[in-house]
Length: 255
Image: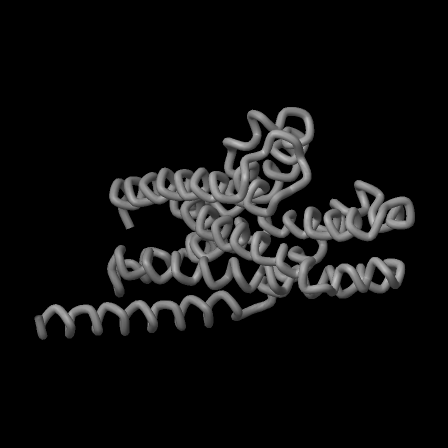
C-alpha cells in the first residue's frame, strides 16, 4: 500500500512538472500572442459575417444574448488549434524527439494532454473576455444589461467545456499528423469553412461530427443538434477514438 502511494505521488509530481514545463514552453515567444488574438478575432469575424451586432437593434434582448453566446462558441476551433500547437510546435522545431527520449512517451503525452485541457479553458475565457469586452460597447444598454445578468453567464459553462474538449481533440490531431501546416488547416479552416456551413444546411448530419457535437454542448440555436448531455458523450467518443489513434500513431513511429 505504501509503495503504491509513493508511486502515485511520484507520478503526480512528474505530471505536475511536465505541466509546468509545457506551459512555460507554450507561453514562450510571440506565437502565443497570435493564438490568444485569434480567440477574439474568430468570433469577431463570424459575427461580422452574420451582421451582428450591427443588426442587434432588430432583435430582442434575449435573442441578442443568444447570438452572443452562439458566436462565442466559435472560439472552440481556436482551442483545437491551440491544443494541436503543443505537439506541432515541437515537431516543427525538431525538439519532440528529444523530449520523448528524455522523459518517455507516456510522460510527454500525459503532460501535453493535461496542458491542452488547461489551455482550452484559458482560451475560452480569454476569448470571451477580449471579444465580449469590445462587443459590449456597441450593444444597446438594455442588451448589455441582459448580457451581464447571471442567467446569461450560465451559458459560459458550455463554451468553456466545449473549448476544453476541443483543445484535447486538437492535441490528439497534433500527435496523429505532427505537421504544423496540415494540422492548422484541419483544426482551423475545416471547422469554419466546412462544418459550420453544414451545421446550417444539414444539422442532422453535422451533430455527429466533432464540431457539431461541440455546438450541441454550447446549445447553439440550430435545429437538429443534440442536447448538451448527449452531445458531450458524442464528443467524448471522438476524443477516445482520436486518443487511441494518437497512441497507435506514436507507438508506430520512430523518434
